[in-house]
Structure formats: C-alpha cells, structure tokens
Length: 330
Image (cartoon, rainbow, N blue to C red):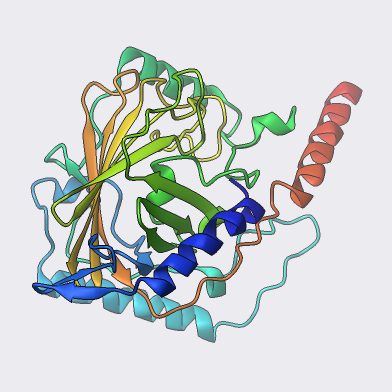
C-alpha cells in the first residue's frame, strides 16, 4: 500500500481517535470504545544482536555493569565520529554508505539476543530446501552485485518494501519508528522505514484466498486480555526477511506456508513488548520466536524518502552493461 493510499485510510482513523479519546479503566489505559490503548509513536533499538553471540551462548541477560560498558563504548564511538574531520570520496573510490548523522545505533539493553526461542538465542537448523537457498546465495557473485535486471536487486533496495513481514518490524540502523493508530474494529501500524502501512482488522472476516499474496501478508487480529494478537498468512514467498544471508538478494525467499503470530503488550506507560512467532516449515526445521521492546517516543515521524532503487537503479544497470562490454573486449 503506497503513501497516497494511506492518507485515504488514515483520515477516518485519526478522526476516530480525536472523537473517542482514551481513558483509564482499573489502571489500564483504554480507548473511548473500550479496547486497550496502544496508540502513539514507538521506537525500537537495533543495538541488541538478532542472534546471540556464541561467547554468550548460555546467557539470556547481560549484567548491569556490562550494559553500562556497552553504552559507554557506543557513546565514545559517536563522539569520536563527531569530532573527526570530514572525509571526501576520491574519484573512482568506494562512496561508502550513510554517514553517522543518519544512523540510530539505539540503546543497548540487557538482552543478549532478540531471538528468544530456541533457548540458545540462535535460529534453528535449516531444512534441506532452506540450505539449498542459502547455498545458492553463497554462489552468487558477492551476494549483492547482481545487475542483469532490476529484478536482481532486493525489494528493500528497490524501495518496494523493507523486506516484507516480519522483517518490516525488526529494528535496523535507522528509521525504526512505528506509529500505531486505532479505531473501532481496526489497528493500523505506520512503519517509518519505506512508509509501509499495516491495517489489521479485528473482526471475523474471512482470510484472503490462498493464491493472493502480499508483501506484508494478510493480517487478522484479536484481543487476548490487554494483548493484541495478530496472525498473518498469505505472505509473498519472495520476502527474504527470514534468511539472515539474504538481506539484498531477491531469489531466495521464505517458504510459501509461512505463518506469523505477533503479540503486542503494553507493559507500562512507556514500553510496548513485541513478540513474533515464525513458522516457516519449508525453510526451518522448527518454529522460532523473536521478542524485544518498543519505547514510547516524543519524536515526530517524517516522510521516508527512499531513492536508491529508483534513481540509483539506472546507474547500477548501466554499470553492469559497462562491465559486460569490458568482458567482451577482453
């Protein structure tokens, strides 16, 4: 769903929020129509590793001293980068990536990984088909340097989607904000990166036919007490969020039977615990679960202007054709 179509959806949602203000019932904040209130701009941190480092294999949590040390090192690194002289790219050199101004390293928590199941904090073993997909990626030239056609480039790089669900929810190095709106019968999540919008109906409407797939799937939600539970099916098999080796590769998607079960629980006024169970039997030998907190933010969300796979695509493909011509002349 594009930015323009979101505005057609968001207007009535915002109006409903204004008319039906939140109130507190028995200490739990509720919307004007009685649902638990999850509304606000929330931000997540990419400072916690996705998988647990092998040297912390038996530890779920860091000590208070270790967290303080990690935060201090991150602050020192940021200060060092701030004080450095600007570096200019030389002609023919590597232009690199964004400078530190655009990066959001987040604040390190005491968790040693976002993966909480399996208990070792690591992704489970791949199935033979999952291993085949990984091997095919490893055989690609550099994994990311494919330029025969625009379809070789990853859907995230082309600014189509952040990678589909559940990747769209996982924190990265920047633009990790999420704005939650609510209206009777719906929860809407506006994700800052690639300005994606997830509309979650809370009624009993039937799911989409199995032959209709979407980048972020077909979501249905319900309330389990004060926890929002969202089940997502009908994900396009080209989403490659679940394979950590496939960040910028288009050909090794997830399994076609992929199912997600998310849980959103407001554990305090300023914290929202997010959990997603991933069941991808085509790629993994067992389900696995990721969990991490969102914090309520006072920042505003601005338009995410993604262009690398748009304006940049012409240069990528022209460079590929120049390489082809050079190889032909040899």
